[in-house]
Length: 430
Image (cartoon, rainbow, N blue to C red; front, side):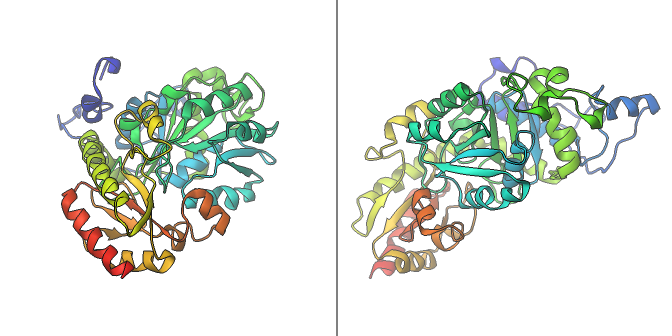
């Protein structure tokens, strides 16, 4: 599509990046299930390997089906480019890989998905990296945490599991002042609810497994580059600004400008880390994105109704949904997520840990799974599953205390979901 700025979201979610197949006229993007691609001649092959020409070499690096998905997500996010990979966790490593070196750190929100907290607090140590976890509502603490070795700031637009809304602009201003990129995980919000780049984010990551695909069929991840960060300004990002030996001294920032991070993600990240998205997964995600806005509207409509019902129920201690007027994040929603607060939140069950476990086991429509963003309504007891590896203090900070369950509200009939919760709460608190 040309001039994508002139089209609305509903049009772009169907058409961005896609064109009728030139060989067959097929309207749906084909699944290019091919490992490698034939070069026109030796000169063409050399140009591709030297990054002098854009094209397809080998599906670990580039694939036509995946390329359509990358362009579509980048367009919806308002970014310059995107790189898709095998999972949301892969996307986080892909985002940090060009920025970090041994001894460097990332300043991260305390309100993150439990797997991300584990990845940042444990796994990245093996690369010689470290993370500092800070309450992102405390802006002074964020400023104080950034030091000369900080190479990125990382947070979630809508935090998993509590559904807390991050003040992206305020954190972006702090990152800008320090001359370091802000990375926003936009999985729970999607670009339909929030476009972090418009609020100052440098990079956006997604687990495309969740709302973007929306049907619980495939895993995937994506890194979107805003194209606005000056990688050569400070000397802190030599992978982007200094000569790359593997490409005869090419400097990514100098050669590719706004697309420097995207080209690095493919030419170095996918080449060497191999976290490749397969074309079948890209196909399923492309089909899911076609109905993203329709699904998100229904997710939010249901979430608002159910959260209001839960808040009034005597068997529930509290509900964290930011769309509730009682939420401390309610006023922030209209600025960060003007179309709604999403459909992910937690609620505390009277009776604590044991009552939560019994509630989960008593539900009939809600599925007990370690996922979110599905058309189906999902529930999990985070303290015993997704956040189990964390300390009690980390669980509390992340919003995953033992008396709390996380729900991802689907697009079923809201009254049926309320009836299911009602009968399960009766069993759990009896």
